[in-house]
Image 1 (cartoon, each protein chain N blue to C red):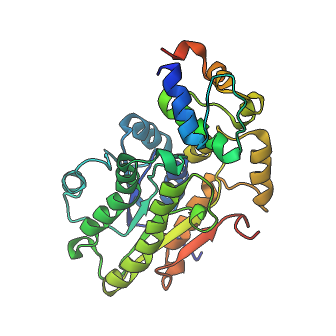
Image 2: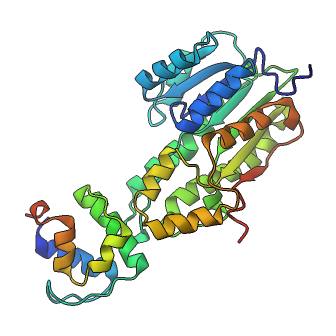
Length: 71
Length: 253
């Protein structure tokens, strides 16, 4: 998946507008579970809930998933 | 000695036989004299289980619930053997938010969790497989997540709810043949595939919370097996069309 595509998917899933990779985004518990599911299905990677406490932006998310898994 | 759970000469069909619940149930039923017909996709594991139980009354068959069920059953039910019991343990689950659901998810979870059981019952409830004197008992393994729901488990809960209703509907339809149909609704079972699958995504806090809500602790595969034994035995002769909760008090508060 390309990073741009990922950003758009995240915005869609969280139902918020995300203008760039550094924008501060707030993720509630439902959002967290949604992203865990999405990442599981698209990157075959299981991320635990508490890892999301450190996530403040899409870039943080990308690091969490692993840069090497992106095109 | 009065043996209330005597299953001597009773033939019992089990799906999901290689699951931890399936293994616990198989060992339990064999100890009361039952003949087992164990179904699973994992034939190697079935062989291991058969070897471990070390009893001639255990018959194993490779079976895929997503494939042609009637065809597979016709290859297994080849003699005049009656079917006295059926336990549907097989099932799939996944945590997925509404946004990400698609028809393929719906189809696969309903096929394995619900339709396969219906189809198997269609076949084994035929007169030729029913011992008129004693009838038969079918047990569908459902989930407490049909009473106390959890976020993002919509399709799973929906499919298991269907089993609850199936028990009631078929209890009426099959009663004239002395066939009883019930479902069991367990809460979290430690040492089960489902537990590992779902809990791997939760953090410590959530797991602790779940643990506290199980007033008598998490279940073990034996707890589910014991309830199945009760429903398959003569102790439950007048129990049919019910959804039996074994949840360690989980759904109480």
